[in-house]
Length: 252
Image (cartoon, rainbow, N blue to C red; front, top):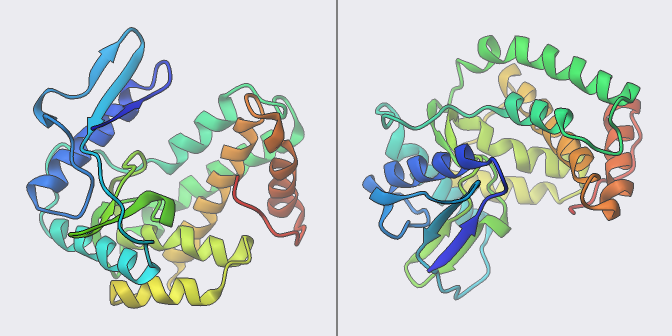
């Protein structure tokens, strides 16, 4: 098994993963399985611990296979959302990052990031409710690092960002990857081909990309408190979002 230990005070994060994992396992979706899910999470002091079945990797994940796995999760929950699974909360994550102490605390940039979060949040409900791909349980961060290819096929892991939300949200990370990180446009197309559809040019998907983009900027800003080496990348992302700096972002 593999033990995942959350930070102090992150019991809710562990519980989210357990609730999602239980619900998706009951529908035979391709996600990591908990060990004895009915009695998880465990608590040791102020830390939450979850235990997962160890997965043996046999190959490198492809974006086509990831798109197929995400589609399988969506299909397993479309039209019949599992009870107890929380709704995704990207704005809660953004605000938590901005509220955390960092090298940017009290700056004009933080104030502007808050303003943008409030603006996007006011539009979210109306503009994303008519997702042409439906409302389902989404993974939230479908990158190669969050997938393992086993002998039985590709399995998605790390469910900390998963929850009920518009299906197109699972396309946002790849869209931002092409736009901001300079990843090949073919990556997005491979994922969409595996999925069997794509969001299209509706305003809600564009908004989702802006929200995900804001989140990865705020995440990097928060990380400067504990990881000074991230400071340079955080500055690049802030400048790119707030000032239009075209410098490509890098994964940290």
